[in-house]
Amino acid sequence: MKSNETQNKEKLFDALSTHEKMKLEIAEELGLLEKVQEGGWKSLSAKETGRIGGLMTKRKRQQNSQVEETTK
Image 1 (cartoon, rainbow, N blue to C red):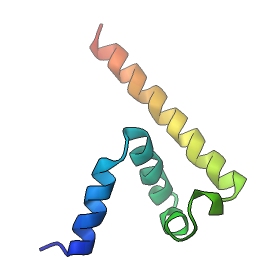
Image 2: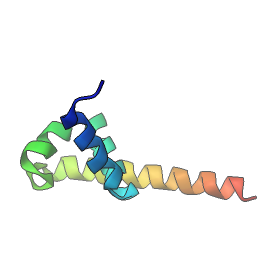
Image 3: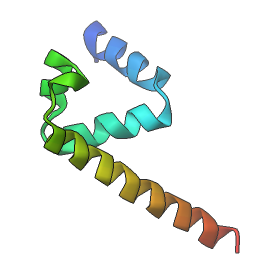
Image 4: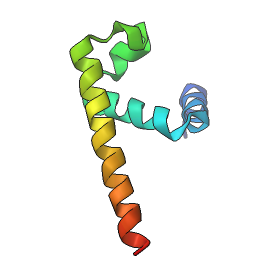
């Protein structure tokens, strides 16, 4: 059974936009989620922020190309 804290975090995550969800998922994959949780997005270096942005752009392009392929 999930704790109340875990359930609350999941509710907050579900309330985020798809853009924000993707950003958090990528931060987690890069091992930066804890740093973001502790200090906010401003605590990241320019290099870390750029990496997240670059991966977000790459994923959005992949999603768009998949949508285009399915509509053909």
